[in-house]
Amino acid sequence: MTAPFTSSIMTVKPEWIDYNGHLNMAYYNVLFDQCADEVYEIMGFGPDYHARTGNTTYVAEFHLAYVRELHVNDPVRVTFQLIDFDSKRFHSYQEIWHEDGWLAATGEALTLHVDQSGPRVAPMPDDIFEKVTALGAGHSKLPRPPRVGASIGIRRR
Image 1 (cartoon, rainbow, N blue to C red):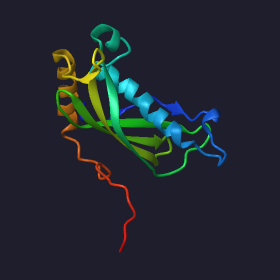
Image 2 (tube, rainbow, N blue to C red):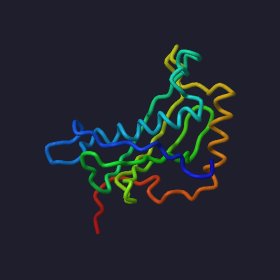
Image 3 (cartoon, rainbow, N blue to C red):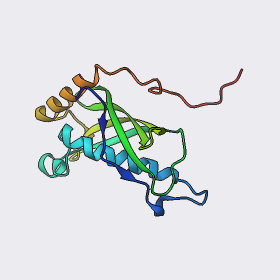
Image 4 (tube, rainbow, N blue to C red):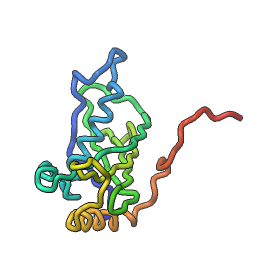
């Protein structure tokens, strides 16, 4: 896969709208997570992964940047790009795109592979690591998104 993974179309639900009339901040994370569920199938972390292996993934850190408001019934797609990885963790970057072609939000995650018997961070099984490596090889050809690694703070002149 030499392009970022792109999710199926998702729709902003009425119950996700806050008192300001736009998507509540928590539900941007829901959209990012639903995309991750889709790409996890490709990576081998599908719904049966925990039951089959005793392993799972935990997001250790997530950075979200709001770019433009989403409203009820807005159709969106979410992209996922694997930025870096090793046998125990991976760094990913996501974007929420309105179907009209504009960027609504970006998200960046550091995800850990976890053996639930500890729980403790542990290497991925070989077959899973091969799938992650294949995705990483395709994504390594993509340009690094300019928002990757952005910091937060008040910039003083």
